Image (cartoon, rainbow, N blue to C red; front, side, top):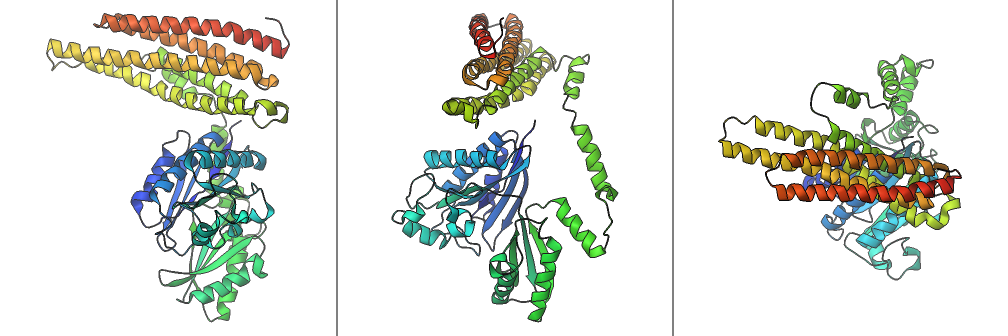
Length: 508
């Protein structure tokens, strides 16, 4: 069952494209993570990046982004309209699909611990992940912003971080947490008076006696007064109701709304609800919207997870994808099964004493899965280079022989790497079979068997490439390495299957 988490970190730089675009590229460098939006605001000197993916991948991307921001954003020289406490000011996780708030809280804690320990960044937990009632709200943690935090963090017990050192650093602190979906929504007025915008914000926001689930503050942005708002539950306090309240309060000062803007993404439902309200289409059904109907049809098609395209491509009368790519796929599936069992162990009270081991397997299985998945295309590309080398008629006989030799070495190195990675999957499967969730232990054993198949198929590809090598010393080394890998895996399988049978309660 696919899990999807959204992460929306805010970085204290909206004026240097080299920095905030590099942060976005750092996030994109993690396989399985999709960057949906990058919104930079030079007046607030702040960039909001929205990305989604599986929990482990999203946490890895967040870690890399926080690390990059700490090295390239200096809070001692930072100025901007928006309150901030750190280079990566806030990093919330939002559950999107098949994942609970509690699982996101565990994810926030794991990331916070790693950021504090490995990067030396002070981390505070907020929202549903808060460890103290007073830290549930972001504004309370950011009180006095970076400047006051820098003065107090080493001496004020109330400033003690949840993770990381209580030391003033130029990258400040990072606030990591869990929250529901939030809409960042700004309304502009035909005035340059930021005080009026702030007075309106005070009346609109909940803590000022205004609307529930609304946070608001007034700013001056590009010469216009702006009421900047965070809408924390648009289902209970609709966007159009907030818009009308701002309009009414602005009219009190003889002002009107000139425009509104979204920062980052918003759910389609929020806009559709506003359209229904303003157009008085009270009986409009979502299915009457063309795009909604198309999305529903696409979702039904996407629900079929059978890899039909890959199977069909393998069946075609062409040399790629071939056995090497299939070996890589088998290894990736083996890693996925191992990762699944580790995931079903992490966070379970029954297995509290093996959490560190299960978490280590979870992280490494994710890493192996990504590398083996990448090898599916790499193997096909490597074989393609061999074919290209044979087709180079413009080279001399010696030149073509050298090109073929180099391409053949490349075509052998890929399955050799697949064999090694698949052997590593067997090691992980052995670890999780011994301590993992007994209800899924046979899945880990299945992963080990599949990984053994990946090793053996990859070994065949190594050996066939070795036959065509001019460098027979290298060919001999290849054969010796894959023979050793096959023997090693075969021995491991005996132990894995025996342990599986004992823990699951059956006889082999």
